[in-house]
Image 1: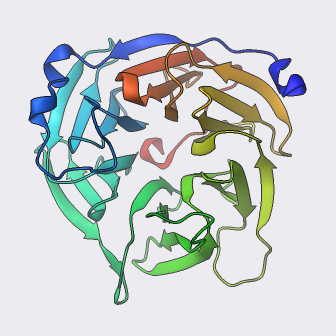
Image 2: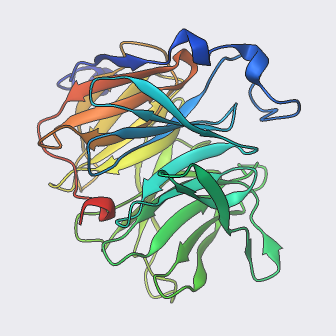
Length: 302
């Protein structure tokens, strides 16, 4: 870790914190999110709309919040689910990777949440985690469930803009964060239990190899985002650090958390897309870091 600890450091600070009124453990529904115990929230899946509002999910309570540019939280919806990753369609709909229910869609104007994709053919999804849109509207998502080294059968899917669901990977040990390169020709997938990122061409015809793009020696990998230069930002959970690696997999920056160790996911935002907003999940905070390059323009803003 000596080389990594000597990398240039990008500082974080707290941008916003979940208000006390949303931290009452009594709001938890019986039997909801049994994976999380004795926590008042677990924030995940940050995503910006065109107006600069940040949407985040709370897995434990089945809640979606809207955070204003000033850092004010408003509850958009609470429903019977375990929302994790969020991505916003360019038509304004919010797509949710819901561990309990599959891919769901939220209408932010009405607060209505409806199912979008729960199965592929006759097989149920095992527990989706994160998702990303390509510039042509294809939706890529990870189906993690309880897979790991003991059961390396996690899936990565593409739901095409034409409405077809295709399995791109079926042998992934705990697939989690997912991102596309600036020109959409490389798909990155984080493997939590092995703290590595795989890369591949985003197609399912078997004509390209899947490779290990980068790997760390501790913690696990969670969310991924890409900047417009092609650098990949990786959330290294249980370590409380985010790594910025080049498009060749070389570590170039270290972003230590000013909060807890469960910095799970992030999104580029701000007027010039040069601020990185990070979910400090178990503390109920959103951190922010000033970055050297703007984030990739996402499908929601095309």
